[in-house]
Length: 120
Image 1 (tube, one colour):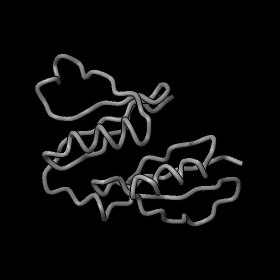
Image 2: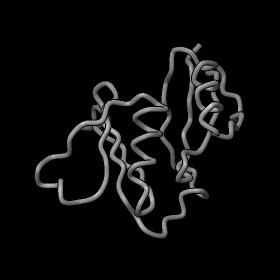
Image 3: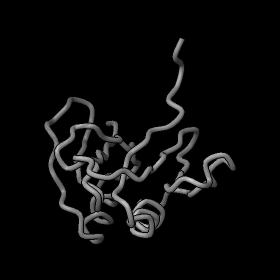
């Protein structure tokens, strides 16, 4: 049976690899990892976060900005993350309250929805 999430894949438009590397690697501070040799010919980036991976693939004509699909990042200091994202020019969206969580959402530069949360 299923026991863990190995990776999550999101997409970016063609020509956006540098911006994706800057946002996910520099702004969010994720560690970029090399793709397997068999996939190096394909465009995209892979990042590591603990035991999970975030794969960023290139996709034309995706409707990311209308999608509810997202990654939820658990953070130790929600207000510091909010500040980092505001400084990077992200629009912060207050999430519907859920008991036991403080959280907010934003969109990455490509329209992918991102949630940041702190468990109380």
